[in-house]
Image 1 (cartoon, protein in one colour):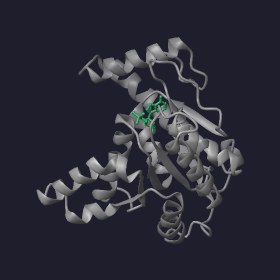
Image 2 (tube, helix red, strand yellow):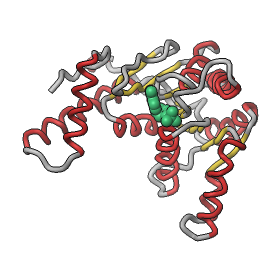
Image 3 (cartoon, protein in one colour):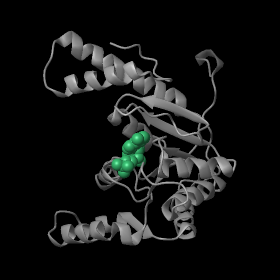
Length: 253
Ligand code: AMP
């Protein structure tokens, strides 16, 4: 086992984490190994909860790790990060490059709080340089829970498999009532058009309810996305007047 602290991961941490996760997912192992794994997961949740307890209401921005600065989607994500910060939200992302970096960068430039939940990946990766706070997670599933737990809205920028995973995690939790129906804003109508068509087809085949289609708001406009989130998250959940968690010195806070 590697030591639990991976805030500055080494290549050995990354390789060890990958090996442990693979072994865990391969099926039953010795019970002591299963127990050790559970303790590492518990520790990861503990660190996540400690890190995020005081960051205030967040919006998670999901999107491609591969989009370069200066491209239209990057600049949109950056403008969204800035606009959401001005609405009073902390920007929460996967902490990586591309559109995650863009949203964190926008938040930083607008004077908002910018947070990243980075992930240990086989290809070594540093957190993007626009983060005020970050945490490096070993496990995608822990990270996904943390991203959802602290968010009052989700912005889905164009992205690949990682983005789809996070998008549908949030959507499944809303569809099944595990979390409230927080706004899910999907940016890039043309990019997402094939997925929109697939969802409509699902509704026609009754594999989803027609009502589920209303869980998503599609737009190409940063202003429209911000207005929607303001109306459906800030006002509805009374975020401006909501009591903040109190710090307890005896917990080292
Ligand atoms: P993708 O759409 O496949 O580029 O994946 C992007 C999404 O998955 C982001 O919202 C991240 O949370 C997660 N993800 C994928 N790759 C990375 C990475 N290199 N660093 C951090 N997060 C990543």
